[in-house]
Image 1 (tube, rainbow, N blue to C red):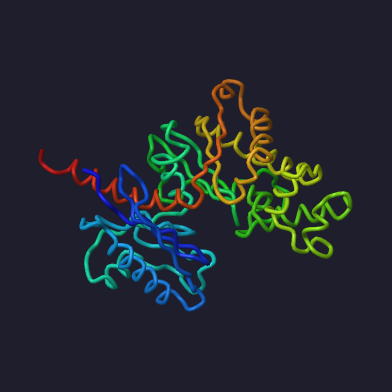
Image 2: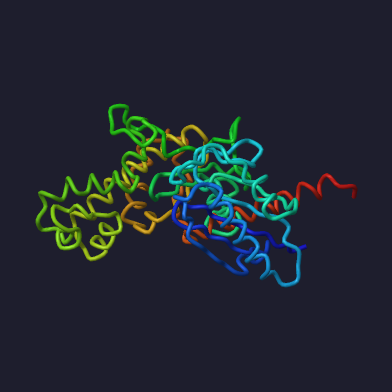
Length: 329
């Protein structure tokens, strides 16, 4: 059996969807603007339209369900998203009920945190495939995380496990968006890293960033740091190395806690590649107990946002497996 499912990545700016075949991956992709300023009902209408459109492209086969990756907390039943960032006015929204009502049928719908689904997608389709268990880190606007154990998501007691981005590495450090002091997101989240880079580079006139980031470096982004680093800009390389060192500190704590020694790094900032990851590979060994140092690997996921859509579709495939396991032989 090689079923089809739809995987959706619900973002603050874009909604991306893919028709996915279990053993092959993407069949077709489609996207539209979120238009979140118009409120949850409008966004839900757009998701339903996208599902109808992409389901119509299925090659005369049944679409077995929809998986949705969303930012923010997800309830244990995988039905509802709770106060997702970048989606104003949402509060608590039961995506399963809302979409089934709009679609006029009880199509299975599953909702999960977007970083968790990036990990699940990596486990079954991406860089995480060789690892039965690994820690997933997503570096982007914020810092997301997932714990993959035996190729499934470890969800904790309420479904909220894996919030690695809000682990504190310096109790006296900067405050992140949830008010947590010194979390890794307060160092590696895009706006935080940009701010740090600006402060460091204002006194480094030799850096090419001064020709890229506008007056007083007000327009500096992590992408500019990466582009400058690729051209041999030493100050930019130093900043990305600093970020990688902090990442290694946090990963050391995770490895000590979980005894999971494989790490996959995804998200937009992971494109900075070796400038960040090589520094993390060096520093992580300083922060794990000696018995845990063997077999540590930190790899970069190359699927990008596609990992989340593949992971979302895989929620449906897991549901089909569970359903088949409960059926009489």
